Image (cartoon, rainbow, N blue to C red; front, top):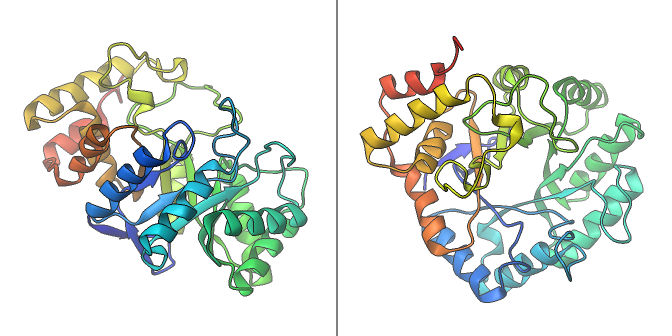
Amino acid sequence: MRTVQLGRTGVQVSAFCLGTMYLGSREDAATSYRLLDQYVDAGGFFLDTANTYARWLPGCKGGESETLLGQWMHDRGNRARMFVATKVGFAYPGVERGLRAHQIETECEKSLKRLNTDYIDLYQAHVDDRNTPMEETLEAFDRLIRAGKVRFIGASNFAVWRLEEARCVSHAHGWAEYCSIQQHYSYLRPKPGASFAPQVAANPDLLDYCRVRGVTLLAYSPLLGGAYTRPDRSFPAQYQGADSEARLAVLRAVAQEVGATANQVVLAWMARHDPPVIPLVAASTPEQLRENLDALSLTLSPDQLTRLNEAGDRE
């Protein structure tokens, strides 16, 4: 698997990140291990989780994904080779939503224990907290970096102006800056005014910000729950806009031209994106994961990329 630079850190990470939300919960340990091993065998080493995964499933309370990853890395003896990202900020049983200093530091200790590690490669603010001073949040993250418990920090579900405010605060105090932003992003574009609350979707302003500031966009839900290829899955209402049919028509045409699935074309398009985008790929079966990973070897011509980029622009 090829690698790309994460923000301006100088560190290379896998071009596709493995989203592990349901590992250790919906997917049992054996299936989870099989998917993780398959991803690593393909050359991947960038794993994304969160302290809350998967609290919303029956019988789960949060921390299941981190715990599974910690056990798998221990069993495989590969922690040093993995680049592990986790998150803090959303509520789960016994923990309030927020990015107060004590929340960040307490949750970091819990995540370290569940992940069976003494450091987190990328610690992300999972959701913006406008009730806490930005200085308090960023100073807490910076303390964790200076203590060697965190290497880099990122944000998720932030408005672009808040991301810039955070950059200015960090710069003014000499603190670590967010190197990445994890946002809802796919090939189809949300219709104007669409809300994903409490999630936030990437928009043209954010893409331009990432390009100028050197921030890497980590795209979650890139395949929209399988709607591109599964007739039994409908596209979310937020993506049923005026240009959707035009973009889908081009997507399907390109998929037919290159002999690939629409999912693979979406991921291949992201892999050649400007600004750089790292899609979070997830799967519940080895076949699904193989389909996603094979997108890395898919070649799209300059003409096909132009058609994909410009589809629906005059709608």
